Every structure is written in C-alpha cells, then in structure tokens.
Length: 422
Ligand code: DP6
Image (cartoon, rainbow, N blue to C red; front, side):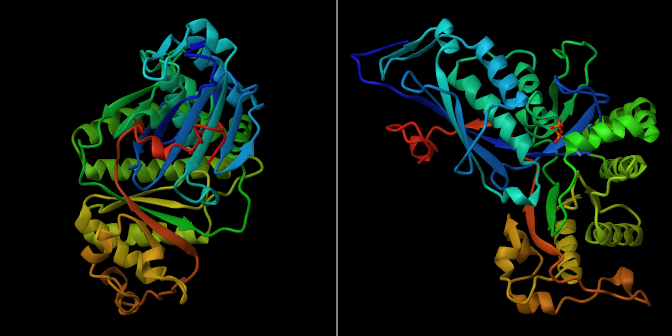
C-alpha cells in the first residue's frame, strides 16, 4: 500500500442492509461449516428504513489486528463464521485507488492489511428479529465495496451465507430465493432475486415483538437437533418444500395473495411442527404467538378470503403480512384490541416503523385504542381476553430494497482520525 507522504491513512466504506423474513423456511443443513441447506427457501426483504444494520468497514496500515464492534461493544472475530467470511472476501479483493486521498492498495496488500468493523442495528437486538441476517449481509457487502470486489453470480450471497444461512437472502431486495445447490463446494448455494420490492408494493407487514422470558434454542443448534431426530424434517425437505417452492414462486409472480397466504401460513406451521417433532421438542412459539394466529385465522375465515398471512421464525415474534393498507389498518385495530399497550405506554412508542398506519386506522390517541370495539368475527359468545403487556411493541413495515452504500461520511460509525467507533 502506498500513500502520499508518510501520514497514516484510513479508507472507509459504510453500508446499510435489510433483514428478511422467510415465507418458505430454511431449516436443516447438509454441511455445517459451509452452511449448505437441505432445501431451497424464499423470503421477503423488509424495508431497511425500519429494520436494518449499518456497518462501517475501515482499513489502515496502522491497524494491527482485525477488530469488530457491535452496537458499540467490541466482539470477538475468532469464530469460524467470521473467519470464513473474512477469508473468502480477502481472497477476492482487487486493486483499490483513491486519487483524492492519494491511496493505492494493490490486490496482494489485502492479505497483510487489517480491518476494523463497526456495526449497528436500528432495532433492539434483544427482540430476536433476525439481526444476524442483516449483519452478515452488510458485512459482506461493505467489505466487498471497500476491497473493490467485482461481484458475479451471487458470489457475495454465498460469502454472507457462510456467516449465517439466512443472511444470503438479505443481499437482494423484494422477493428472494436461496437456491440450495448441489455442489459440495457450495459455490452454487446462492441467493437469487425473484422480483424486486416494487413488484408487489401493496403488501404491508406488521411485526409483533412478543415478550418472552425464556432463552430460546439458537437456530443453529435447533436445526441440528431437528436434522438428527425429526423424520418430519426429512419428509418436508424432500417432498413438501420442492412443491411449495414452485407454488410460492408462481403466487409471487401473479401477486396471488390467496395462494401466498395459504403457503406462508402452512410453511410456518410445518416448521413449528418439525420443532415439536424434534427430540427433545423445541418450542419457539408461546401463548401470545398462538393467540395472534387465532386472531388472524378467525378473521380470514370470517372474510372468506385471506386478508393476512402469518409466519414465525425461531422465536415467539409474529410477522404478519397484509394484502394491502386497508387490510393492514383492520389488522392493526384487531391487534390493538386484543393486545393493548400497558397503561403507561405511549401509542407512538407501541407502534414503530411506518406510523402513518395509525392515522389510517383512525387511531390517534390512547382513547381511540380504549374505545376499539370487538371485531365482528367474535360476536356471539366467544369470550374475549385482553392481553396487555404480552406484546412489547409492533413494527409496521413493507417489502424493501437490498443493501446500499451510505455516501454521507458523517454517518460512518468509525472515527476517521482514530479508526475506532465514534
Ligand atoms: C427459522 O440463518 O439463523 O429463521 O445458518 O445456523 O446461522 P444459521 O441459521 P439462521 O436460521 C434461520 C432459520 C429461520 C428460517 C429462515 O430464515 O429461513
């Protein structure tokens, strides 16, 4: 690496990446180190304006080791997954020239140069909202820009995959398929975009962050236990998923909400059935999760055609996908009726993300929430139990774009003078 004069220099790149929610689930690996799945999966990328990871990567000849900070706290990079990502990225690094700063880095220099990485989630990490997916996608994307990697054939997605399987799907916006591939090397296990975020922009997504005391089994451990003990998982990956993938691709292509909702709910329920079929059984959903399913199922049943689809990952949070804004307003009214905020909570801190949905639902104040009437589908006998406090908050969002560069240097997470987080 050369630079003008002898002053130390720092070169930085900042990027932002979305998280994603699977509508056909990935569960089970055929290779644990390379992270190769036993079936294809399909996801919707969530709008990074509401849920995203921002990552700044920096390089300088003054750095003497690779270091990383997550939400301001230094974390270890010694884990195999970080090491795989860094190794795979460095292998592909190219020549970099910054004429303005007078910096030239040759391809061969990258092996010696160390990087600093600072990453920040704009949503509570504790909520268990797929932060590793956004995180590894952002890491791969930002490092690829810093090291001037010419991305070909979903290569970046296959690097992010080695950080966390579901991360490979966060490299694209809209609707994304992770093709499992066949090769033992994993080079064909990549994400491909099925349709971009404007293809089906009627959809509105409401996430319920469900309160939970319990520490859940990690996805990694859970899917290993399912792979070893669940016969349903192997039937699912061989027989059920291949068929559903084709049907889901068609539903997305045709914006056919009825099929989309049917497949999404069925696949979430089967994933949780696999967890129950695992020995010992794994419980990710809790009573609140199941109450939300009941609320949606009853309403869909009452309307005759599905208005909302639900899906749950390895935790109790519900991800609800409404066919349009009108349905999302009606859904929100139902959710706030069954799960009102605790008395001391402000409405605007109970619904995060796209708050304009509150107004569309005619819910301006807490009084409006208190005055909500029972939805028509429960008239006639079904007892209503209100569950204040069982949902921490809701987030209203939509399908969104893939990773982007953040060009405004003021938004970098690393101080260009010190090389450590601001
Ligand atoms: C239930 O990608 O978190 O969210 O590859 O071991 O890091 P690792 O697992 P991870 O698993 C996600 C599982 C899921 C379904 C999905 O996102 O497809």
